[in-house]
Length: 337
Image 1 (cartoon, rainbow, N blue to C red):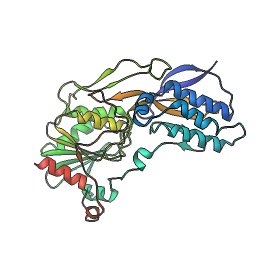
Image 2 (image 1 turned 90 degrees about the vertical axis):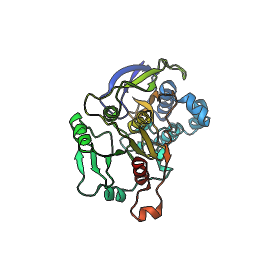
Image 3 (image 1 turned 135 degrees about the vertical axis):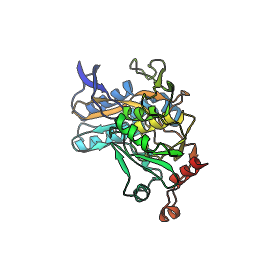
Image 4 (image 1 turned 60 degrees about the horizontal axis):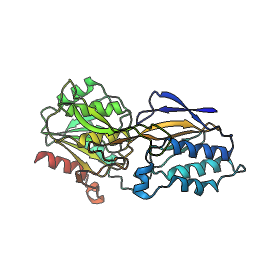
């Protein structure tokens, strides 16, 4: 038996928690790599039931569809194309195939939708005198609304950074946190920020773990709680700005904040990505990442395909040309009422 290395990671690649699982040994041929990849996904992927319900995914039918495209006479480039096409059937942004020549990915979760974000408008609203605290840019807008731009949860933020930022914005009537285009990162950064807006231990969702190789082999739902920060906390209304490029840990942040009564999501539907990723390798050394542990919101609903905002707003060409970000302006109106 050959052991492939499989390791859990957070919603981005962090230091792995390593555990070995036994897989059937496959030869390092195109057909062998195809069989290895299909089996890894078959035994460890976590959203088969959900995606069968949502759009009719049938993993056995996928095997038959792509098996005929594989032969031991094909090139490495051709094999990579077939394998990435097969993985795209999962419609999962956390599913990737990595090789030295390319990075197979499924990005339709945001590429097929309006961006609802403008770099030019971001510069207009931030100006040139904004403050920077680790991964956050922040300032007070001219109607006394606080504005925080957090572009990626891969950028760490400390408790001191959050204390200084919230202290500076303390007299504002409300707060905007703009996470548009935030593709995720370290989940602890998202939870650390969210902890500044809860005042008691709060149920924010559930999680499951794979317990076997079957499509239905999962643990019972395990509750996730958010602990309030012991430092400075925010009590006033908050608007979280979202778009289709809010993914992974950023999607989880939106899900957590959506449970809080003083918070509204404003903008577009988030991109999703609620499965905790796991990785494994093929006989030829290519690395495959996939969703292994499903996460749910506080109502035990799936958020793999994202969540809808409380107030749906889209940018328009006309208002963008006038220098107005309709999503920011709608949030400002909500916070000044």
